Image (tube, rainbow, N blue to C red):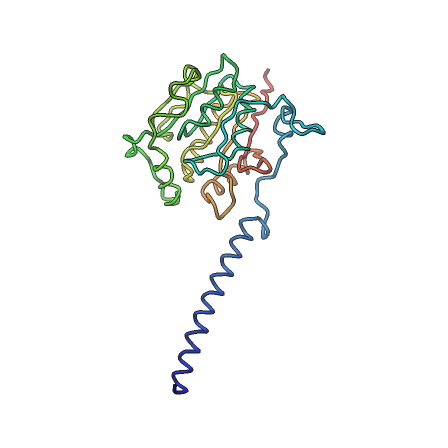
Length: 267
């Protein structure tokens, strides 16, 4: 092989090696950024027992106050699924809530868990976009394509985990696009609100503003999938923006963000 050919081969090898190194560095940088090494995630961490005293532990761990009826998912991948620890948190908080609202029904698992663990006189209202109304979805230029596609893929359910159960009588199922949802009948009435609908930026902001209007004094709003700048970036961006106006907190060990509505000074 001539010297020229050797030089060409060497140049190709060096180019490929450079590309591999560049991609590896970018991947490593994204992982470091995701873990908050370059800059801490804006929303401050909070321990579970700071969310509510029901999560207080003793030398044996969680107490029987946090005992709930529960369906775990283990290692299984399910549509729109919360982790077992996140589902447990929602279930425990439901024990104290009599008026619950959920943005994003999906399979109805969290709906069922909140219904089965809430007081007998509790009412759970849950909202989802049905498959025959996907044309009502309002995508904004600020929304990521991935978040939009995921939202539409999770709007394929008309039968839910709670369907046919005794708890179904406690549940009101609403169908429609949350941007078109009129929250005025629910103003200041909800003790617990779970926001896990479309993870597109404009929808997270829209659902959140409605939730702030709906939450009762002392009530809790929880958001799902605050996972950093590399995963669910629209949720990350929207909640960081809201945290400049409201004291949002990130529950340690979960992707849940929580806000508690202050008690009114007029009471």
